[in-house]
Image (cartoon, rainbow over all chains, first blue to last red; front, side, top):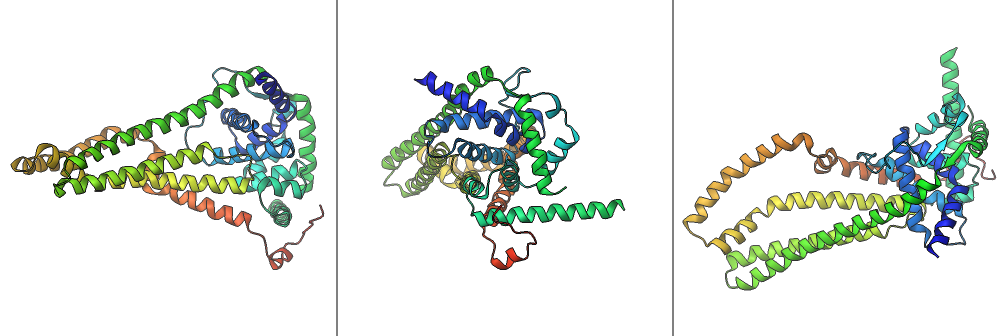
Length: 169
Length: 226
């Protein structure tokens, strides 16, 4: 029975590993920290899996846990590599163009890095294609608030672009 | 770059991840059960050790109070210490209990608020323990010296000796261990982390706050139908 649950959990992790990767990459610049955060998220997911409510979409549930753990991790100042599994193996490995810090991927994550931890969560959810209702349910704020914040972020980006353009002229 | 352009790039990144991202299932399988058990065990062990220690202090002081009930000079300070120990025990149990039952699958704003409140509570607890330890010197001396050793000339001599030894000891401890003292701990004592926690709670409240129609109309592009 336990093996069945573990197998189901592993399969769900396999199906949703991109969420894990993107959250870790957005909240941690350092690869060692990323691995540590991925482990913390998985431990929390596993601990909560026993009481997972099937009526909720798995991705919504996973985003909530991953973002909650990531924000707490980001805000902590203690040494973050204490629990990293020793050895050269990594929990998540992206090969090829994804990991070679291509300019586009670098720009994307670079922009996300500049945001505060709460707006980071909002942007990840927006970029991942979640609608306002889903985003509001994950973050615990109203849909109107989500829409307004997204509009503000768009405005900020636009202003930033204008400043950059003026600067290069 | 516009946010919608970023969204397109992100979708492209997502497609690439489909092909290139590999989850180490073997490592995952070995790791999560072990670490989940360890995390719970660590909290449970902390709770058990703290509770046992505080209970021992409370019971010993209770016994002392009963034995010296008719000597208020020592029984009153012992009552003060016992009450402080009971409050410390209750605060410890509440902290660990809250940490163990935190449900991370609840919405982000709610959980972050609870975590930050818990963090503030923990910092205040640490500060309170340090402060009351200093303030508790008088009842501790009264209980130990008055109740155990008996009052008299020895009381004065011991006071003088302690008065000279304590500052010397504190200076020695700081000189020897200050570089190794946790930065986190020192920041907690200084109240820096408390300010950070309060600041984040304000940020959270701001994040949760719904904008007024006036504020919304000031934003050029507002598209709730997206």
